[in-house]
Length: 346
Image 1 (tube, rainbow, N blue to C red):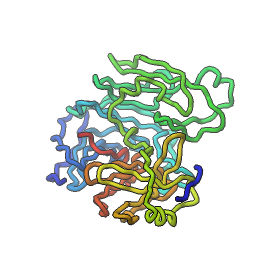
Image 2 (tube, one colour):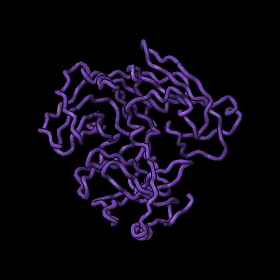
Image 3 (spheres, rainbow, N blue to C red):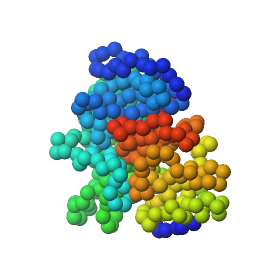
Image 4 (cartoon, rainbow, N blue to C red):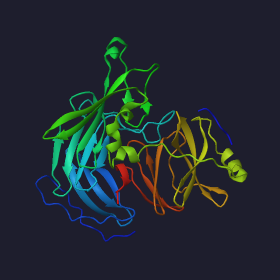
């Protein structure tokens, strides 16, 4: 092994749900039902979407572009949140991205919306009063939580630099040295953010320093994390086939992604004690290495791999853009416009 350093539903009427309007009929949750953000005429629709039949329920239409969009869902499925953040973009491991994104304009604003998924009403919320909001979601009691990061006092004496974190313990675009940070946890209640927790943190640890983070429920930022549980590939015949595919960059190694009936060989690149999935992926079938059809990603892309039953959902990590869904060796759905694409929780 080359190792380097490093189901169908009847079609539904597509009717936007607007604040003050009647909610669209609920779309049953099938095995393949997805949560997607879709840009429509300068707005962004959060949809519950079944790709095999194209049945779709618009949950809410928000007055924002979908760039930088992410979602969170309460445990009872009655409330949701959508955030638009310039930091929620897909970054390649090295080199140029396969699907480059336009740089956010000066008019781009960091925005957070609380959505009533029963009525379709949306309320724009202020951001937490301290630090930069990194991660958000609902706890088991249905409270909307927000986790932010703030530079410690000593940072003011150091040269300024851009720090991008995604709340999962991964830092991107960070220079040398370690800047001390404070992680802060808030709950939105009675119309305002209430601070519940403060912890010392770092660029690598991020919001993971907070105990409150363990209470966050379903959210796209977690589902779109590129980290995966890597298993060793031990069959020599398989390793010989994979060796011929090994790239010079990014640095990494072949590892197996195993989930249910799915077995994939993934070129993983290390990040601390974790392994990040890249776009170099092959199916493993009875000792053979098989390429997925109409597969556009490259080794330098950073990917999210998720499965449900016989289906495999692959998208760019973090943004959840340019998704592809496969069943075995058949591609059953793809999109070049949807973002924050994840399986709808059952």
